[in-house]
Length: 491
View 1 (cartoon, rainbow, N blue to C red):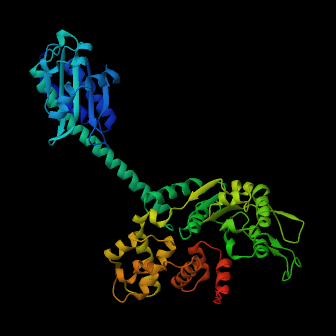
View 2: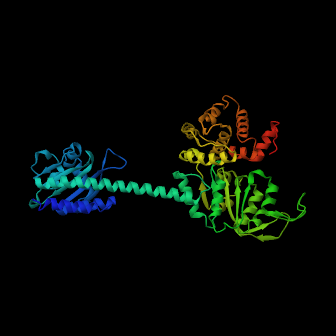
View 3: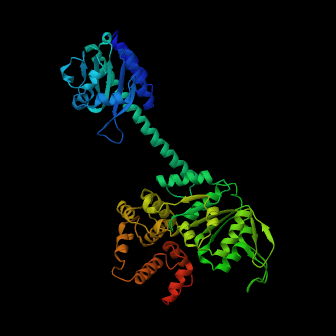
């Protein structure tokens, strides 16, 4: 069959397909225009897969089923396989008698009269193939048809490449916008990695709800920063935000702190005192290390969540409070429920929404950003003219496993700022590998625990609270160990 004005047709088609920038819509339009111009009966397009670069996937078809396409492709002698293997176009004026396809059952069964297939190539790189056929004798293809198909495939290759490039750019642009929006919305939390972008989006979604939020994750991952962000971006932002570290207080003191007490309720209760829930009325209470609270306090906390009521120690009177409770733990709280140390009903009340903070080793790409942030803070605080951290040092920091997470990184940068005398912090000012190599091997667990505790205290300049948070233990346990070793510390 001869085409009228093939060049004019090709120009019109080229102009049309290059106005379509969405890949799937483009492929559909290519197929429609091709069948219309060639008066072909059926056709399909195969393209190299995005993931499997060695395979070719069906992306669009007209008037032909997937089963039929599979039968056309199944034999090594098939039209399509010849084209994909040789990267050369194939034309058969009469496929039924063409010796090249002798034994190709699909040609006979499908009663294909005329067939064409051409590779889709861009800069000699094979992208896929276009196949068309006709079972009507009056619509046989000829050399002009093949010339047109090959030129058309060249135009299609450019359009497909551009559409895919556009899709990639749009995806990257969308990710950058997500990262920028997150950074602008939560400047107090440093990070642009995908795990952190997901955290930012979750904070945005739940910040202004009334739901209780349980923030989980290892010590030092920034759980309190998330809690503060939830408060700041809620309608309660102008009301109090009160953090309580539950692991540092004895049961009776924690109960008194949270719920208040009546004068004379216990030794030292010299006056009536409102608890933190009353002080936080219309605001937010953040209960850090919630897993450490005892059953008696858990029961009273459940009443706050269910009824919005508190009862001071030594009183029978209940008082109404309107507070949002955020909590955090570095333990598996459901495991604590299974062990019987944490109430199941309280667990479900606290865990309406869970935000799981990723450890620093799972977002290593944030380490340079965090280092710059901490460098600016501690260089200014210590009046040091330090400009940057060397690439070698950053590489070492990214290779380190950071058991203490962001808090440990902050301490490491602060120490490096103090030790550095020049304008650049080098790898020698961190020396993370040396710290790891010093871990005692072949010692008892008691000796290893003591080593880890003392090294952590050394790292945080003897601060018991920081050391307990990094180690994932309560401050009481840490102090007990030090007392047992005759090394009681006062802070």
